[in-house]
Image 1 (cartoon, rainbow, N blue to C red):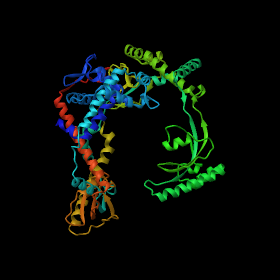
Image 2 (tube, rainbow, N blue to C red):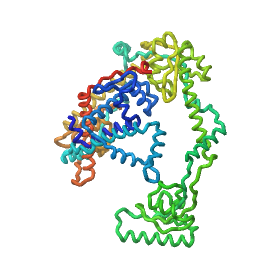
Image 3 (cartoon, one colour):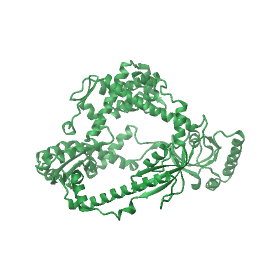
Image 4 (tube, rainbow, N blue to C red):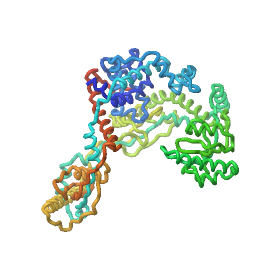
Length: 623
């Protein structure tokens, strides 16, 4: 089983996709360090995964509103377990990285380079921004590289036979011409009567269907860092000091920016010499005209340019900096004089006649231009500090003053929100999704004693507390409240039974060569397995049929309240050659599917090899 990883490059790639981001974010010590405190939420091969590590990864997830969801927390823990198993496997496989390889990998990282060369100062500065010590980063990078060695140690274990790919592609491209005869439910509904005894029996036989879940109305408070930021005033002097500090640190640099327009004479990939020469002659002619009368540039662009995205606005490309255009085009723009007409420039798109219309030299962005960005940053920083100051106090007040949210609302200048009825099982309050908050809101303390819930994190730097204002226990709705609903359901059930019987009888008659009174066939339709155009049940029935002769018929009861007979009039088998690109694509897709199965089997085997134990606390206990 473990050799499967060495024999499947796709599995290795899938493994890399799973583990690289967490390693880069948290470092090797998060997986093998023994100095972390706190309770272990799981262990893999005897090595613990600590609560602190789990919380760190949990809060790094983009879906912060789901932090309290048990299923979400379990998914994050499963991810950590998978990463730990793969790390242990890499260690046991004796995958190593020497210091020279590590240095080369670091030097290749663009973020650590200046003018295309590795810069030690830039390296230290970038890691400081990330808040990651160099030793931890290098350890995590070394671990990533060890795992990447798996890719070099594997071949292509999943080999898709050509015949298999051919059969799959043939099935996907096969076409069937079919007509349908429908027996709809709707027209029968009005003629069906339901008596009181049937309604009463359905009500008695299905008590769970008519039970209204426990529900509450609630009031709530939200302490939100973003809302705090909106109320923070930023001093102009502080903006100036921050701007000056940014400039001193080399910030707010404005690279040279140019504006240009162009006329494109397209050249198709693989064009012959004659076509290239013809395009060159056209481009040279236009360039010569424009050197004599530059004012005609926009006019000629609209008439002659083959760039549909810019020709209507005179070929204008707007302002741009280096790195935004293909190299040949960029080099011409940033070396050409303003308003001049240069020689036509060849790129992968064709030949470009270029005119530079504006130049903004390299410089420093003025304070007037970046004031709002600096102010927003200062507000966000101040809000983060303020939130850190208030979060603990907020939690204490709603806990200590447990009979009302009013004290917390007054102290923190917050507005109390109110909900309509919320049923047990709801995911959250309004826009705030939190299963942990819902669990507390339906607890005995909240519903019976009307105590405040604890302050619970429902998002990134967002705390909420709630209190039940009204509570209703689960109860069975009275028959009179649901009579109309039951009657409609029974009427529809009876109509479905009738159309099913009518459809099955019509199908039997057609198979005997008889006609069906009132039956009407639709126009023929050409259907393809790989292009869904019918309800899944219908498509499955049509393409699963293996008729000995045509026409052939199948009957399907559809969820849109109709019984439908489909008559297959013709089957068209596709033809393709061995070099058809669709065949290679099908083999690749099938190979990926098989590789995924192998990966799942491999991970299951790792769980057996490295004994996995979990002890994930509930969100309430974890906080």
